[in-house]
Length: 421
Ligand code: DSN
Image 1: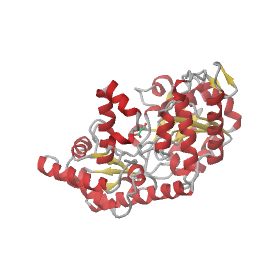
Image 2 (image 1 turned 135 degrees about the horizontal axis):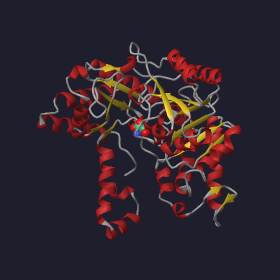
Image 3 (image 1 turned 120 degrees about the vertical axis):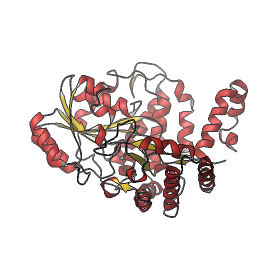
């Protein structure tokens, strides 16, 4: 069945390079047969995949529409112009740049547009849910900038805005970043804006995780408050792998120059066109229902995992992901991740706030509902998924039990087929 999905060109690939052709098939099978609970993944549409696999991939287009450094850009220019207009319309943004190759690239451009090496930036700490590009010592951000961190309170595991303000007043950052990779709650952008105004900092929101929920009007938008919003396009947003930046018009030139020629060469025009397609999809009523359903499912999954005896960090979720403290199971995050993997359940180990374990081990797992919701799963399936996770964690040493769970996972996903046959 999987072979037919790729269309007639696939036979040529099978003849030319059977090794890679077989990987394309087995990865599609894996995505179809297993449970995809990684909070940052989704199933993009066949239309987006078509653009990614198109001849736009062949075109060099350094520069911006109408101002390129190569001839023959008239067709790709149209795709980028349409994509920019769609992004501005969907998010109510004054400026959009669709060229970042990834979320990390978008963030490099944000640093470059607003700061100089050595400047102070204030961002959420990685162990409390931040991101590598928010100042980790092993990342350019932590090596080239003086990044100070804020975190969550130990009692309620929510961002401590009083602490954030106190630190901002003390360190006087050039830029304050809000946004995280493992924070299940909503962020109070209005309060962050007032802190930025008080200390004269640029307000940067790294919205990679939740921008799809904003696009679907399921949660409040940071766009009206922030100077700049960076994000990836492949998470809840359900577009191609890549990045995007929105900003106030006053910062448009700084952002565009930071991307090109500041840190990228030719944009990946097949991805730019694919982003335009995803933005059109996001503007539909169907996508808005999807975004709301993602949150309903995440809440249900967090509650069901609590019913299985685990603890949802910060008491549950208001977004697409839940962070689960699994210490009650006696199994750490690393082992749980590995056991679930063998059972056909893809999720990831994740540090919980104030985690006593190292980041390589952790006391938690992170689960997300973007992919299973795209498949059409709903309230009925969430307790079933929670039970499969709990059994995989508990019975992971017993190969027969893991094989049985895998069978049940495959039976469940078969009822919600991903991609046309
Ligand atoms: N890798 C992304 C995630 O899983 O959250 C962050 O870059």
